[in-house]
Image 1 (cartoon, protein in one colour):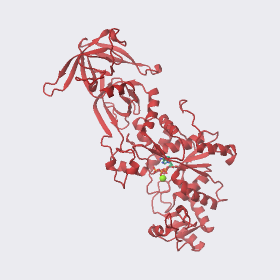
Image 2 (tube, helix red, strand yellow):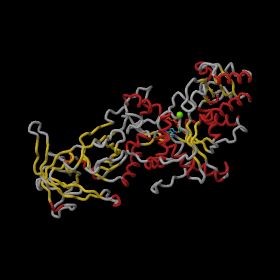
Image 3 (tube, helix red, strand yellow):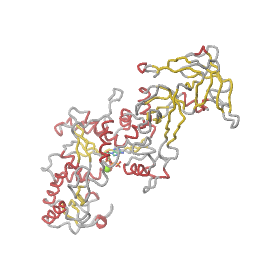
Image 4 (cartoon, helix red, strand yellow):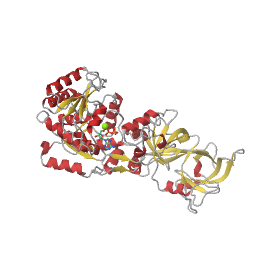
Length: 567
Ligand code: ATP
Ligand code: MG
């Protein structure tokens, strides 16, 4: 981690852990875990949890954070998700060392513990189907009713459970339920199902199992088996904590550890959704071109867009950890990447919508080498050569034939400074005789103004440019938010989200030109194109003869923006 990242302040979880360590609880050990279900790619909300779990563990000598795949639902899980999760956690800068686990790795123990619960009278085999179970469960205001199978003899439950495992029954025929309290005000405690029959192939255990534990049952036991000290999760699990504790209390003496579950609020980010189910729906619908589409809030999408691990970690640090709703403005995420790239991205010039300019004061074969620094504050990034030639290009909207007031760029008869070069004056406009469109400007340059303003007059504007023949074509992709509403999570109904999609979220500019030197750049290379923003070489579409850049983020920019405002 770079030294620029500031020290994380003590949030309520860090404070709790610090107190526990000071009191010698858990022999002073700190063991956390990040427990993704491999049913989708990780998103920015997961980054919050990753930074917390790995971050806290890293703050203590001998601290440890496990990566555990919570893979108890074979129907929705895939190996590609496991691979992407591993890649993304590493890329974010965290290391689980040898502590990579799978809940499925505990299936045998989980099964044995379930037999134990049955033998101790804490679980029974139920024959209610899903619908009946819902009926019996009661509501928030009404107690539930006991299943007719609740008092089935222990030996019968045990026998049925063993036959369930052996594959003797079809799906839905039986479930194993914890015997807790059908009158509990907490619905999670009303005899929850802990095992169900699923004749499904599992990505880790193949066809070894046809019964699978539920999340609530597997999670607390997995935590205990790994001797997790602090099990950090999001607030929706607060109501599950009594169940977490109930199961571990019943297995006291069988599992040696009882982790403490602590909940914090989940991140909700403006203009996007952070739910794997919804992100999956976007991918399947083809609205985006995969989980790593640069408009996606996934870690892989952010990476492809040009976000850096340091910027994402800094974002997580700035949003903090608490129990209050964590609804965050997109501008906070954007300012984190700008702050990082402002320091580290080399500068270059790109013309997104070129207008040809002929410099009438130099010869057709003139080619003068100009030196341009790669970073205004960081000389270590060096410099490059630009070529001052007769035919150059500028941004079409940096010229105005009928300028509005305060327009500080090029106008007929007016002067402007070309970045890293000379002051030019527009002497003539050439138009297409048929359409009337401006196709070329004829300008003269003042040879005394290289890197220096004229002494006798004021030239206000500075614009970027490129030598026409010593630049190369490129495609630039500009992005806006994928959704047209700040709160798509709330507006999302069923799986009909099309009306929420911003039709302008992707704009492909295919006639851009970039500096000649920006050839064969590896995917992920990031530049600041002066006055435009930060741009990252795309990992899917970029080819040697066809570089494609994704706009990571625009410039916060003082001068460019003011000029745009006045135009
Ligand atoms: P999703 O709704 O996207 O599927 P999830 O909570 O079901 O999210 P998991 O794979 O189970 O996804 O999550 C792994 C860990 O990441 C959990 O501890 C979960 O609490 C945490 N997490 C998931 N989403 C967020 C979020 N938006 N903010 C903070 N933590 C999150
Ligand atoms: Mg989940």
